Image 1: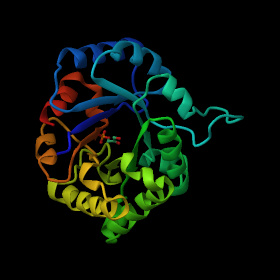
Image 2 (image 1 turned 45 degrees about the vertical axis):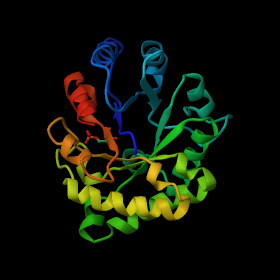
Image 3 (image 1 turned 180 degrees about the vertical axis):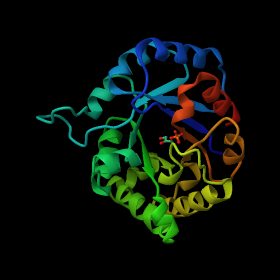
Length: 245
Ligand code: 13P
């Protein structure tokens, strides 16, 4: 039996006072019947770690460098994230693939760098609307995931996968539970063939998850929780989603 996981992706939002208030509310609403974490901008990791320390709410980053160290201005290494107590690092978010030209191979290298420091990579895959309309959804997500599986090899079962259809992100247009389940089943079959341990791996859904649609999505057999953008910034909404899990 897989324990559900709900991860908030704050993206480039927040401020020190707003974060402190949000996290205090999140802590106050415990316990949750699921694993809960927030992935915050790098500069807030120290504050977040201090506030969430000794709680069962985890924290993580939204990206990680593929490099261990060196002359890579602006990059943050997995070792640095480890020092900040990160349990998770999102890699391959569609916004990074689109705006920073991240390739499948780079995403795989980032996942490997995270795992090398004991940080669980939350590997995002998902098709654009044009790809869905062209009937390419399966091929796209399988290609994106297979690059990571290949690179992580025998450690592949340690990642968390997040299916985030690009057309559902920040648009208010959620995949239906059935649409999401269909892709999750494909991903789990691929993970099973590669690792033999897909039964214990978590596959999250992301894309306009809200308090009022979370329960139906999380009820699907292969949806093991959510990666939450906009709704993770409002305490009441995020708490409701965590409870739905
Ligand atoms: P929204 O929940 O705002 O659609 O964002 C989803 C997402 O990109 C999470 O990583």
